[in-house]
Amino acid sequence: MDIFEVLHQDHETARGLFTKIEGAGGKQEREGLFQELKDELLAHSHAEERVFYSQLKGSPDARKKVEEGIHEHHEVEELLEKMASMDAGSQEWLSRVRELKEMVEHHVQEEEGEVFTKARSILPGRQVEEMAGQMQRAKKEEMH
Image 1: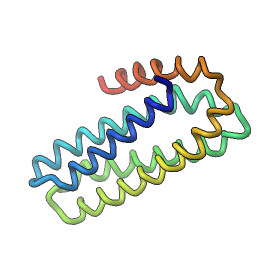
Image 2: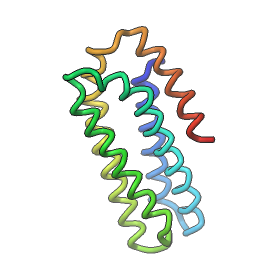
Image 3: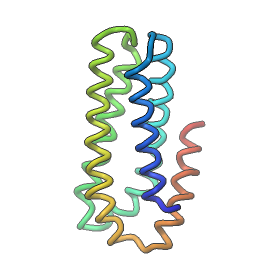
């Protein structure tokens, strides 16, 4: 497994959690799933910045996309914080879920398209494999 597969798996986990939230029956179920999504997204973005983006920042070819990715992480974090204090039973909260999902989907599409392509040309194969383990460890640290 390499870093691209690890990141893709995380993206799929987030998609699955969005689907569960959208189909959740009650406020309590939504709150539990939202907490899981929030923990997952924060751990993913912090670990990704430490392990993946840090290796790409030095490349003039990838720097702009990395900075954009970090900016998007911060926007997602701000929305997560706002949502955490909102009533998960409200229509406004549900619209924020849709907004968050769109933000995350946009980020994932750009990352898996443009950033992964640039990273494959910059990072040596061995490093790409080593980064997979580093990403998993960093994410675990973030979760605790």
